[in-house]
Length: 250
Image 1 (cartoon, rainbow, N blue to C red):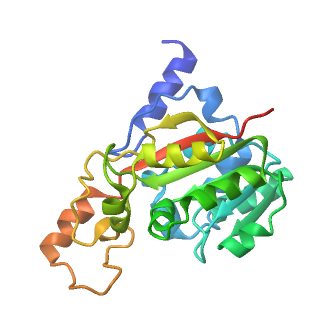
Image 2 (cartoon, helix red, strand yellow):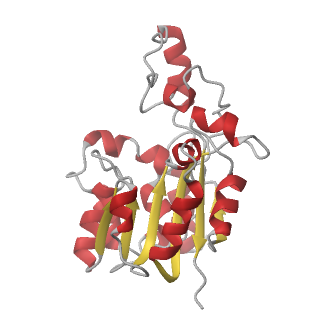
């Protein structure tokens, strides 16, 4: 077996149990040393690093097209900052810039055409419930540079499902996100099943929040029994879409 193929095979064997197996050439896997270091850093909270098997940060950021020196606007990073804890040190080390926008007011302060990448993680269902999806997508198109990337990680509902029914449970379909982005002039370039979880049937008493890492209801309903908790913990984190959309270069 040629060395690159052998390295790829060994990398595939190292993927945690239950993960989507991806054969990644060794050269590509080792390409961004600074990003590898940011993901592996012990400065990240232990709880964050424990979720890497489900969120695959290096592979996801590489798929989205993150490169050294970018200006990245992270949407609703929150106080915990799961992605921020990787992006901030990485961009600081490579001469880039990280901008966090937790609400519409902060997003409105970001300059037109200033971002190489906008990262949206698990927020679209909330925007649908608020009737704000189109407004958010229009803002992303405004702040992205020509050729800039919209990176999306989102709990995934079945295709053809009604977002009015699924968004309250935390899920929307890929088509819903792609169509909304398209109305703002952002075109789908690639999709990946890096963060797919076929075990997630989306039939949970408290929606996606029943699953790890939240493992609790959002409205204070009854707690799960120990048997229910074991069942949902065994599923793992949600089935998620991973999309790369792009603003036209011209």
